[in-house]
Image (cartoon, rainbow over the protein chains, first blue to last red):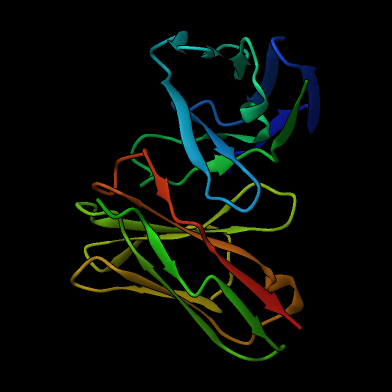
Length: 113
Length: 113
């Protein structure tokens, strides 16, 4: 089955700096890669996603890049703010597998003032 | 527009007992997936229900079972509880079983003593 590895497990940045979280996946048939943000005690929320026919996608301060050859995708957050502090999860799935997402182990991002 | 709702929010059980968790999908959604999130880990896929049938299942034993009702709501049942079943159980809904965009509920925190 699919295996998703995520690094780093913790990340501390100063407000205004950029943050990068990296994930690798094992199943070459995976073609959908979402990122979820989970604040303490709250539900995971989808923040951005990308499909395998696209190499990069941006939404304001958030961007995701995908390298299908290397089976690697990354989340980039620019101009970080204290409210960006949360746990971020990457995930992967195959289209047609009925939303069976395989998640990474999470990255705890701390944005300090 | 109501989001995904789960009940109860917290539950304490003892080993060997049985538990039922409930989920109502986001308005307009017809598919429900269940995930188990252990402390400090990413969510793990348990199974998914669409048209009142289990469509996909993750690597969980038969002690985990579910049901979907005609109004699309769903239940997760766990029999013969083990200490290792202690986790946050997340319900996610989507529109159609081939849609990857999941909307999560806030979860049920299950503690097995």
